[in-house]
Each structure stands twice: as C-alpha cells, then as structure tokens.
Length: 135
Length: 360
Image 1 (cartoon, rainbow over the protein chains, first blue to last red):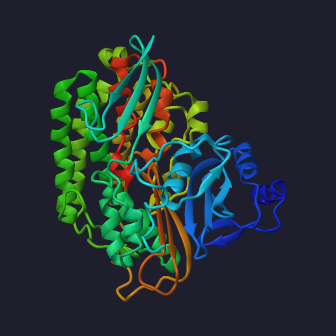
Image 2 (tube, chains in turn yellow, cyan; image 1 turned 30 degrees about the horizontal axis):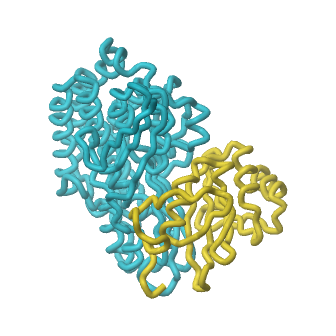
C-alpha cells in the first residue's frame, strides 16, 4: 500500500487509488503521461499494455495504462485532448506497438514519437480498425 | 555494403503470416523490422457486437492453439464484474485444461524447433505425443481445438473420472522425459546449434517487457500463476523453471522443463479435485457498469483481458486483448541483430510466435 501512495505522491496527482473489480485504478485527471511511465518504471513496474476506451465526445478517448508491480496489476488512466496525448515510447520502448495500434484503430495522435507505418491493415486510413462508419 | 532481404508474409521459413525485413552485411543481420496485421480480424470490435455468452465463443477463436486461455481470461473478467465465486471443483478443472493446453502447445513447439534445429524425426515424434494430449482433451471436452470448457462462474463439463487422464499423463511424462527433454537439455548437437544465438539480455527482456518462457529464459522469474494466482493455482505446488543465458538454448530448456512441470500440476489438480458443483450459476448473470481486468499465464506468457460493461445492454462495451506474442515479438528485432542470416528462422521461432493471437 505504501508503494501505491508513494506513486501518487511522485506523480503529484490530486487523486487516490480506487479499487475497481479487484484492481487498483488511479484517475488523476490531468497527467504528465511520460513522467508517469518514468515513475512506474523506476519502481520496477513492468509495462503490460494500454486499453483505449472511446468516449461519446468526438476526439475524446480514455487511455488506461496497465502496469505489473510485483504481481499487482495497476492502472493509471489519462484522457486525450482533441485526440492527442504524449507518447511514452521514449521512456518505455515496450509501448511502441500498442501506441501504433491505438493510432491505427482509434485515430489517437501520440505526440513526440515518429509516426511509423500502420501496424494493422497496412494501407488503410487510421481510426477505421475498431470503429464503425457511423462513429 | 548492406542488402535487404524480405521474408514473408508467406514463406516456407515462417509458420504463420508476418513480414520480416532484414538488413544484412554479408551473412550477418544488422537490423530487423517486423510487419504484422495479415491475420487481423477485428475480434475486439466483433466482441462488442455480441452478447456476453456469444463473445465467449468468439474469443475462443482468437487462437487455434491456446484457445482455452482466452475464454478463461474473458470469463474471469466477467466473474469479477458480476462478483461471482467459482466453485472449487470448477477451479481445479480449469487448471487441468489450462495445463493440458500448455502441454500440447509446448510439444507442438518442440516439434517445430526440432525440425529447425535439424532433428527432423523429432517433428513426427512430437506430433505423435501431442496427439495423445489432444485425445485426452477430446475425451474431457468433446473437442480437440476449441474445448468450450469455460462459462461464467464455472465450467461446461465435469471430469467425472480422473483415472484415465492420470494414466495418459503418466505415459506422456515418460515419453517426454525419454524423447524430448534430453534433446533440448543435454544433446551436444542442440547445444552446438542453439547456444549463444538469438541472445536477449535480462536488461533488454525487462525494458521490452517480454513475458512467459521468453522472459524466464532471460533470467526473469515472472509467472502469473505464481505472482497473481487464479483458478486453483494458489492451492498447488508450482515450479517455475528459469534460465539466465537468454539464448535460443535457454528458451528450449525452459519449455522442455515446463512440459514436465505441467504434468506434475495436472496430477496434483486431479489428486485434489474437490467434490461438489462445477457448473456455477444456472440463472442469468447480470453485469454492472464498470471495467474488470484479468490475466492468465498462457503457454507463450501472460494473456491480458480488459472487459467494460455499460450495465444496461447484454453486450460488452469494450474488450481489449493483449496476447503474449504481441509483447514478445518486438524483442526478435534485438535477438536478430548481429545473428547469422541462416539462424534467423530458428531465432524467430524460439519465441514460439503466434500471429493468430497477435493480430486478433
């Protein structure tokens, strides 16, 4: 528990961990995402993946960053602004493919990272993979 | 002067479709790039268009080898959403099926690895052994590939009589110990072919966040069955083979030892099979609004599911799947850098890649 509280302090987050269906989630609102990745990696956390959760408002996607800290699955949530968010690839190279996949499937722009060719369905426009034509 | 060699997406050196682009100087690989997506079926999106029960059958089709780990992970997430307790007998049956699946997956991989190393007869020997595991799975579930064993809150079929499974596992263990393990752990030919190639250092394994046998062969003792136990693993003794060399030989050894470990786990789970219910709830289950996460240690490593329900409809609002090959395959770029071109097929195969899983 003290580890989790220390993480909140280091992130400077005005939020507390919430238990949701057996896993701790942190929803700090505004978040420096690369700093969050640096804090968790420095504590020995292993990057697991990012889950993109599209919101009804255009260009708004919640991104749940999942980390394993000594067997505990931690999730820190951030939200895109106008479809954009900072990339964590420079701090966490394991995030390369999942950021590219979220770009392909949900048209999220990851700032600060060189745009690679589409990972899935090469040749298609971004944002079509997991969204219907009416979305 | 460097030259580029493209392998795939359809090539005799690859078991499944993906594209490997190698930049070589002479016979030495200097850089490797990977392209995936040739098996993309938008399964995550399709799961959002089916009811929760139909989505179980859908996620079982993510992979043709480790189909059970997908339904297990998905059902565990749904059970967390609905706050359901799984009966002890069902939890043990889930362990038996998960370990039988790991066994047939590892033995299949051993056959392919044997062929790539040069032990061509190993391929047929391994597939002969694998058939016996498939027979056991068929006897329990009625199916050889998609077992449909998991349901929300329990399992769909009981193991009424463990005796035939115990006998089959005992015979399997003898054959594996005689025919597979020595080739991968003590053969001079295997050592000469696999030692020191395709190396992934512990530091690279950690920063690339690889999982499963690929991580354990680079000295990282991570295993979700022990770190965050699910089903009945907390009640069973579990050894986690770890090697430190990080080369192809280490990955061979870890999987060979895991085959024997899986046999031991199946025996334990059957020997301690509790009496009682195994089906779980018989009435309709409702899923309140929220997100639940679930992890399972599949044959290739950690499988992750995130399932979001809106609390109103009978379909998931969002399903996200992170498969182990998706986490492991980027590390192949590191393993190939500096390798002999002729070793490239064996090095990429040493992570036991599955593109059906990766592309989803």
